[in-house]
Amino acid sequence: MVSEFKQFLLRGNVVDLAVAVVIGAAFGAVVTAFVEDFITPLIAAIGGQQDFSALDFTVNDSTFRYGHFLNALVAFVLIAAIVFFFVVKPINYLVQRSNQGESPDPTTRKCPHCLSDIPIKASRCAFCTSEVTALEGLGAPGS
Image (cartoon, rainbow, N blue to C red; front, side, top):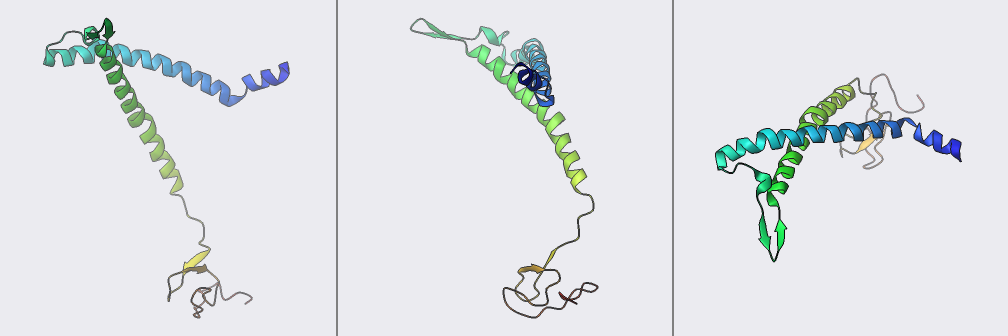
């Protein structure tokens, strides 16, 4: 059982996930500091409030710190934007670019009469039963 546990811990995707969580937490801390130290004062300069985290209201002796929530919301939006524009978009572009290689030879074609997909070597359409000409170089089945 110990060896299975060791094998599980040393499996590549578990280690990769652990590294991603640690880097993500560090990145989150940096973005949170950026929001609190730069973005919030910039918004405060426009709106007049110096510190969003101090914004709150009280109902029946319960304090609601909506300023802290605003800081967290701005941090989340920034993290999501950074991940989208600097990770997701480039990866999608690379995947799309790698998929644009030579396409394999087609195995079907359109029937000229009913536009159904038929095998490329077919001499008759299975849907409308019309005779179709064999494509050049392929001939009809069995030829």
